[in-house]
Amino acid sequence: MGARGKLLVVVLGTLMTAQCAAVRTGAVQAAPPGWAAENGRAMLEAARKIPAGSRVSLALTDGRRFKAVLLAVEDRTLVVQQRTRLPEPPLRVDPGEIAYLELDAKHAGFGKMIAIGAAIGTGVTLAFLAVLAATLSD
Image (cartoon, rainbow, N blue to C red):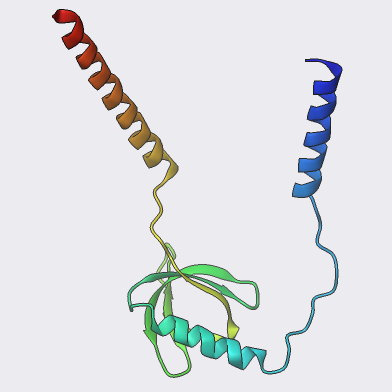
C-alpha cells in the first residue's frame, strides 16, 4: 500500500470515528403548549389499531424503554404487561407519557440467518455437482 492509500485510510478512519463520536449539544427545547394532550390522543388512536395481545415496544417521555404485551386500550390509558423474566403486575400508561409506540415485529436471529444461508449454499453446491456428474457420465 502506497503513501496515498495509507493517507486515505487515515482520513476515512478519522472521519468515521468523528461521526460516531459526535456529541449532541444544545439545550432541550420545551414542548409547545398542548403537545402532551395532542400526542396522547394520537398514541391512543394508534394503540386502538393494534390488536390486544400483541407485542409492542414503548418509549416513555421520562426515558424508560421496554417491550410489553398490549392487554387493553381503555378510555384514557393503555394497559400493558411488561415482558420481563419475573412476572410483574400490569402497568397502566397515560398516552401523553408515550414518546414512541411500535408493534414489535418478529425478527430472525443472526444465527438463524447464517443457518439458512449455509443450507441454501449446500443445496446449490449439491445440485451443481449432481448436474456435473450427470453430464460427465454420458
